[in-house]
Amino acid sequence: MPGLTIGDTIPDLELDTTHGRIRIHDYVGNGYAIIFSHPGDFTPVCTTEMAAMASYAGEFEKRGVKLFGLSCDDVSSHKEWIKDIEAYKPGSRVTFPIAADPNKEVIKQLNMVDPDEKDKAGQQLPSRTLHLVGPDKKVKLSFLYPASTGRNMDEVMRVVDSIQKAAKYRVATPANWKPGDPVVISPSVSNEEAQKLFPQGYEVKDLPSKKEYLRFTKV
Ligand code: BEZ
Image (tube, rainbow, N blue to C red):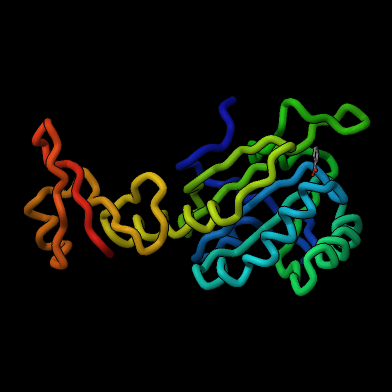
């Protein structure tokens, strides 16, 4: 069975978390949510990732994005681990829930299994998966990283900014785009429409094909 991917509806699971029982769709509500998994509590890379997420929480909140962590240990272990995370990065507070998955069932349903990692009992472990879910409860982005590589939270923020811009205007963001840079006008927008939609103007890149498809504007 193919795993959860872009465009799929996130399963509406009800999970035990450090904030009590939470249903995923209720949690996403009318905004966005980042659901991200970790191989395990009290492991080095995961601790640095959780602390990084905690320090970015305010920026995500400004963008209407809620955070939701998941690791396979139980809730009491997560609560102990949070003390280490906050001590590692003084001033950071883990204000978002961390879900438990001691039976390793949730990671299968959310396409978070790392085929190369097993716990001491030989059971499957989660990869560093991250799903950005939109107000329609559909997956807008998925990252799947191996246990050995901590994620770059600036990149997560950059993608949130790109996706939210594309949801608001008929634009996309080019390679290595960062907020403030020009964006490109979507191929589905004709030049006639572009003049109405982007009264600030746009620049057409002159290319050998003369097809006028690479159009930069600012929004
Ligand atoms: C870590 O968080 O450092 C880690 C966890 C599982 C496997 C490898 C690294």
